[in-house]
Image 1 (cartoon, rainbow, N blue to C red):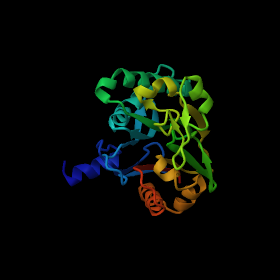
Image 2: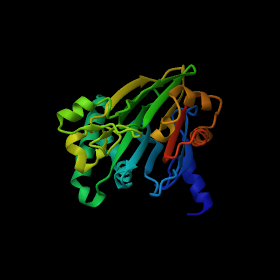
Image 3: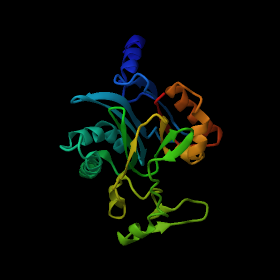
Length: 281
């Protein structure tokens, strides 16, 4: 693929699966633009994050599809989610009428597929945060794990996802027969291993983990400025409001995503980081 082809695909919002940066815009509303950027952290393993950031037509409508998949113990589960989760959501028979239920069912069925394919996908897992923008008017956010979605309205940050931390879900984990470790100098972990209480995959821990997503609906109105989706490499070192304030004056969403990652690195974040910014004006 030559440079001209890559540029044309980026303009259309069609990115190679290995792309680490890109941008595009809505055809329904020219005022809505999106951009993403990814950066490998300082660990010895390969990049384990995967991203979806695109607009597509469905039936008579337009959908903005945005997601961060943050893999652990390998990248295969995150890569599988990149290729399959939105397809599963959009195939649900009641997607247009009961979108929240469609998202929940698709999360569960996709996790079942991943567990069934564990022989090929390996022992790892992935967190996920997904955002579906329906006809530029309604945003449906789902998540498992600690990747996060934040919306900015009139300069104020509002978190749309839920951080599924083991310390917050200790009761559920113990009822499933697991335990939460809390060793000095380390974060709480499920069975002393995983630092999130909900995830896709992780077959060896699945009895003690949940893949139930939290789902939130947000109306897009004239107050809406932008949305940030990012893996925990940003949120470990920045608050929601700090992230919003850092990019509020950057009009280009791809440049905004790059800047957020630069700020996180300057604050000593060592994790893989993926970031999507969707701008509404």
